[in-house]
Length: 373
Image (cartoon, rainbow, N blue to C red):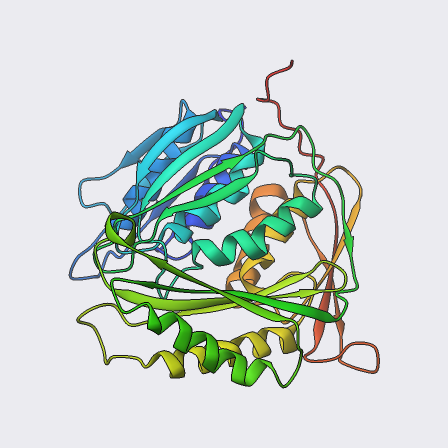
């Protein structure tokens, strides 16, 4: 299949993950040139090379060619095989960076994926493992990827710069995805959260909870924020603390926000009270943006709509993030699919920011590598 599909060519290091993931799913080879060609330190970074190695582990027969300086990458995807895998992620980016790619690929493996990832579980750049579990899993479930084998477990927490965290992720395989109609987000009915602290006083987590509640209690009474203080070997190699919050609506939409403390030795120290208050405000901002999928998982939902059966899927989103806009362009070049985009200005029925209704007909993607029982 991959030999007939003509390869796509890109320049620059942006959106590398998107291109590799879409290339793997569509079976179209991709060539990326000029990766940081003018930089003092040219070529692929550690974390990008680690992501490519991870793709190599979960596929069978992928061909990856990188030139000597690391500024040109040619990737010819193989078949997604899955199975039991272990991977050491780069500590420059969190495990969330790798998990976001895996969430897109996992339902289409030959064997159900069971993977152990080691590295940084919570940082200030990528979605943390807590938020992905709380907000991305419900999106997968809407499309029919559910069951007991869909799980994400934090065995150890690891904060930057040392890392030392460990996560277990498993996902069932599906032959086809269900089309969805997610047009009414509903009203927020409860807020749940997780305040974690590692290698600092356990009191930090309680201080975060009190300050976050001081803001959120004005809006809704049903708030429960768990505290998670990991000790000893489970606490990774660096100190830190943070908070992830998730608002659940009456229609089963999950909107998330999170913050983590500055890494040890970088920037000024953050007070847990300030972090709790800022994170609560970020959650309110996300609720204002609204939609049936929160801003971090927009691209996941759009990808699953694209790969659905040849039927109409609709989803109401908040304002599109720049990452999502670029993702739509990539979907067009890899799958020749165009979305119908209707803006819904905030009026009587839609509270908060302006919304966007995305409609598409799935390409009828079928998981050909899934073994027949």
